[in-house]
Image (cartoon, one colour):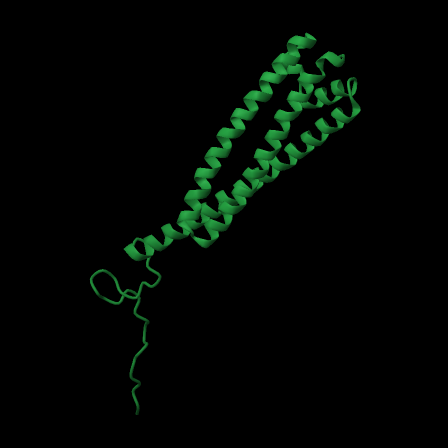
Length: 174
């Protein structure tokens, strides 16, 4: 790949930088969401959800731009798009500019790390919500009387269910 393809690589790097920035914002957002969940801050949860939706849409747009650059590069190099993975792009960029190749490698590592942390934090948030819902459902069953009775002292007719044999409240004195 010769120098004529360098502008395409630079556009692709800019798209990757945008993706890295958006993923950083998304990580901050899911962390903020966690704090709002712990604090039971309804407004904070709603704000985090709206912001997360906007960030996901921005990531989709940036990914579309990245795919467009990869398609242009595929046409210019006559290499199938499926073969232009980020790891292969790092190798191809080395033929043009070592600094650019290192930038691609750094962007790849940053994206991988950010995505991993976002997934972990989202899973943690999901677990927190599921535990909270289970707790709320248990409380609801207790309040509504749907939980199994803890004590079976009396049956439904009001009789003692398991009277202790020979046990008396008053003792007989001789």
